[in-house]
Structure formats: structure tokens, C-alpha cells
Figure (tube, rainbow, N blue to C red):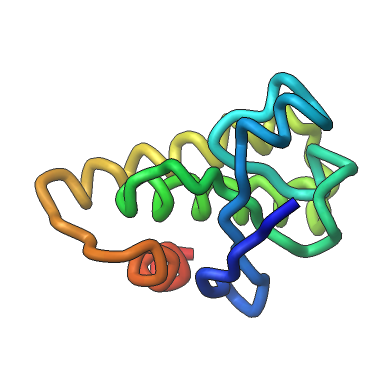
Length: 116
């Protein structure tokens, strides 16, 4: 499967992936993004985001996935608790970015890195 590197958040590499391929070949419920802490098919310490997302969605999704992974791995939180917290962080970033024009997915990851 093709993965394209688009940056990193706190040293953790972020890749775009073909979400349709992942759903067809690996896990049909994969949506927007993921990490190994939720999906065992993702390589350890990588963040995956779907390649079809717009840059604003890449920023929000990458931040969500990083937050969720850290809470699950470092703080041993359950997926449900980590996901809820990551969603609240994601919503704050989405509101902050409302109306902004992020040009590239690489720029989006840089924004997520600063927010993290």
C-alpha cells in the first residue's frame, strides 16, 4: 500500500494513505485516520490520515490521532476515554481554523504539531 510522508508531530511521522484500499483490504471501518494504538495494522508510532482529506481536515485528524495515541500508550487510557478527549481537542482546532486557507497537507501537519 502506498504511504506518502507529509511531516511529523513531536517526532512521530504522519503519512497519507489510501483509505479506500485500507477499508477494502484490511479494515472496513477505517475512517479519516488512525494509529497503532487503535489499529494493529498501522506501524508503531505512525499517524495515518486519508489521502482524500483537505488540509484543514488533515490538521484536525492528525492532531486527534496523536492525542489519542499518547493518551492510550503513555497514560493507559481506554480507547473510548482517549477518543473523547482527542475529539474535544480536534473541535477546538477546527473552530480556530474556521475560514483559514491551509495550502498543503504538509502545512496542515505543521499546524497540528504546534497545537500538540
